[in-house]
Image (cartoon, rainbow, N blue to C red; front, top):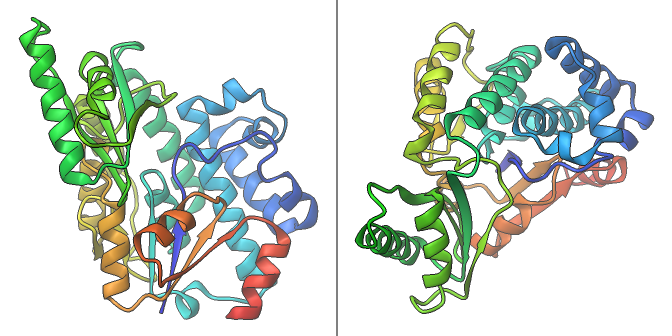
Length: 319
């Protein structure tokens, strides 16, 4: 069995999609449709930069999606492959869940692009710049990360910091958990990490504290947008971030996407659940982030990243 998986924020880089678009009219068509849906030349930003504009959440999210969908569409149309014939499940990390749903035709491409633009904008304005932060706790499992986050909140409150939020945002793999919340406790967690048993804590260069309760205004905005969005039953079930379990009902998908904004990305559990369900191969489209995570979670699984035309040709030989 096989799962198609799709990366989240952080996998963007200037130049993304250019080689694919140069080689394939199918890819150019995808980028053109996204540009039209958004009313901007996102593809030029992807290929030419500047990097700081591409990194803005409202641009990075649709750009990462467009690059992954273009890669998949080239496989499907030039390789004569049907997703439903080659994958039993789809899944994505954070915004990648929208990409997965687009890949499985629950959302059309234009709707996906517009929803991700809105999602990026809503997440950016939910917390004033400088008030929130995120950090990776390396060498920490989920329980250890939760203990470090709780200790950090307790320490800041004891210092007179008032009510604080610091929770686990992403359970990525057995040795990498990301925390999110108010800046003071997140910074305190970084300083506490080593003495509490993690290898180290590293502040992440992000503009907002994603996947924590501080994102509730963004969750409300997405609830309103998704209420009006057409969601079809996906061709194959999607493993939802917040459930680490497959869902296919449109109403369940809508609810999971709203919950995802403030909820934890249960990526490690999702991969283990897919393996338990019989998935032996994971194919990451448009990035090189998730496949290494999969190998750390499930060393016996086959995990490949597909970014270039050569990658696509090699993948076709294994299908």
